[in-house]
Amino acid sequence: MDQPYAHRTWQSADGLTLHYRDYAGPESAADMPPVLCLHGLTRNARDFAVLAEHLCQDRRVIVPEMRGRGRSDYAPDSSTYTPGNYVGDVEALLADLGIDRFVAIGTSMGGLMTMMIAAGDAAAGRSRIVGAVLNDIGPEIDTGGLDKIRTYLGQGGSYATWMHAARALREVHKEAHPDFDIERWLEMAKRTLMLGQSGRLVFDYDMAIADPFKAADENAAPPDLWPAFDALGDVPLLLVRGGLSNLLTEETAAAMQARKAQMELVTVERCGHAPLLDEPEVISAIDRLLGKTA
Image (cartoon, rainbow, N blue to C red; front, side, top):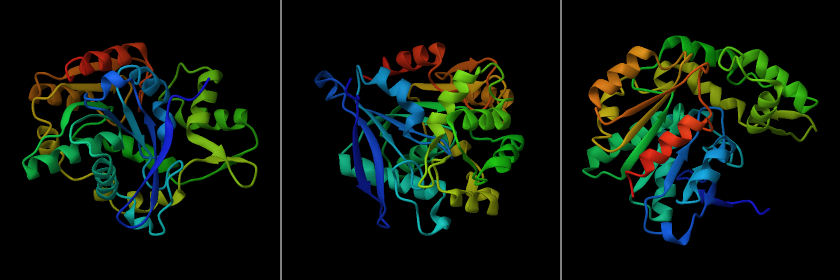
């Protein structure tokens, strides 16, 4: 069976060649806002494979890979691995494609980027985001989750087989996914690792993305994101939270709901940071949101 997407590239302002998956969708969706999927800190376009294949039955779906991840170029200057630069790269992609209205689905760092894009739009007196999904992220980030990320970010490692990689991931992330069997860990390994030049399996991101993240907290997330969250306005919103999340607390999720009465909250039980967005209840909720954004 042919893959449902095309590999395409765009150029960053500083000369990097960046990659995205383009799921064209049906001809009937040509005038509908496309879906823009933004991945997390150490992830790539493969994270959205299941969701994108579902959504592209009705919509165009664009899944960019941030600099230093997947098929996108690694940056020669690791100080450019910051959310502000990632947003600038996405803005260049949107400009290239002539997209002026879209639905954003952001996991973790991708959710931060979604809010930052909304804030930039508000400052520019425009509103391009017609609906948004924030996956296990909010305007306040629990320090326990950031501390956990620091334990593995940029640590590298290589593995002889997929089974070795799956077991290593289980050891690090078992608290986030306590019910995963080995098959699910194998799926996770194939989302996050690749075959390296050495013939061993390695993580599919530049280890140098850890440099600015570890250097200062302000490089991990802007200091006050509540104005950026508020900038999303009254568009349809969906907040997905892992019931065991160490990054998005119940208190922050409740505060978000208090500010956005139209926002739906879906909690994925027995799941930490972050839900995979292939859970049936999450896909159903995203379908409901898209139904409001035609």
